[in-house]
Amino acid sequence: MIEIKNLSYHYAGSRHNVFDGFDLSLPDSRIYGLLGKNGMGKSTLLYLIAGLLRPSKGSIYTNGCEARLRHPEMLREIYIVPEEYDLPGLTMEQYAKIHREFYPRFDTEVLNRCLQDFEMPAEANFRALSMGQKKKVYMSFAIASGCQLLLMDEPTNGLDIPSKALFRKVVAGNLSEGSSLIISTHQVHDVEQLLDYVLILDHSRLLLSAPTGEITDRYEFSYRAPGEMDDSVIYSEPSLQGNAVIARRRPGSPETTLNLELLFNAATLGKL
Image: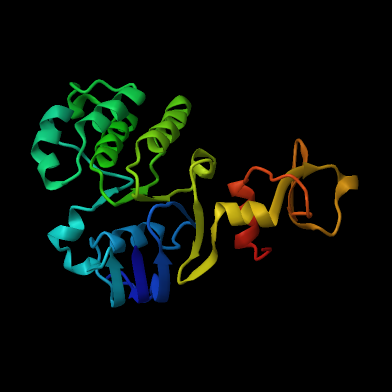
């Protein structure tokens, strides 16, 4: 459980707050998509939750521990994969040997399975890997840690098209039962099939905070010809297949697949 109350934060030298009086409560055992335009505070929020940044005001509690204090009992249950990082000149076996004792539910079997699913050799030295390959091995270790909370900032940046599909397979097949994952991303089509919950952030406002099931219960996502547009449509965009639309779902109509990009555009324009 993450509890954020009256959060304010600004970077040193800036006169503008990234957050000002922000509140948020996130239950456990969900995969969250954290979306927002550039500069809305997505990465900052992840770092605050992990205790890597400290609030100017307010509080953040992760599983009952105040994040800014970075107590070991909190840190062993949280793992962050930032957008940019470097890895030491070690093999995964050497890296795991150094770090796995800190995480009480670390699972070597899960690590090997993630690496296999990502088509990555365990013996390769990190220094010899490309950016995308480093992401695969780092995310594999994060999932194998068994932490209750995983934070991933733009996890599919640097991955090629086949690897993005593998990413979804790895997360869906290996995330520990009871764990939560927060994915901050602009690559919405890479993750929309994974998500249980959508958060659309605009500094200290949430433009949307809802389970994906509730969204697809309420709205229909489809393509319509110009003659099919009616007053049920709340947002539309022209496309090669006709108009891409979000419409109020009619009673008895079949559930449609979530279009996260369309949802994001509608939310940021105040159409929902």
